[in-house]
Figure (cartoon, rainbow, N blue to C red):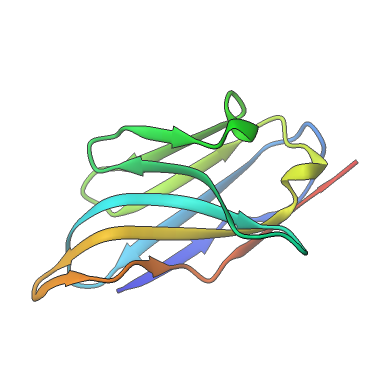
Length: 120
C-alpha cells in the first residue's frame, strides 16, 4: 500500500488550496481516510477525516473553512481548504486507517507529507 499526496504550496492569507491523496495497492477497502498536519515545534494533529460511508470529522480550528471529501471506489481523498490563515502553515500528511487488502488487514499508512505555507 502506498499513499501519494499532492497539492500543497504557497498561498496568501484568505486564499484556497486543494490537497489530494491517492491510496494504491491491492486494497479492497479503507475505513477512514484523513489529513493530519504538523507545524514546526508542534505535535501532529488531526485536521479532518472521513469514513467509507462519507461521514466527516473536523478539528475545531478548521470547521467552516475546510471540507474533506472522498471519491468512492478510487481510494482518493481531498481536502479543500478555504480562507486559509497563517496558522494553517504546516506539513500536511494523508492517513489511511482500517485498510483491508487481499490477504487481510494492514496497519495504518501515511503519505509523504506536503507543505502548505500561508503568507500574511
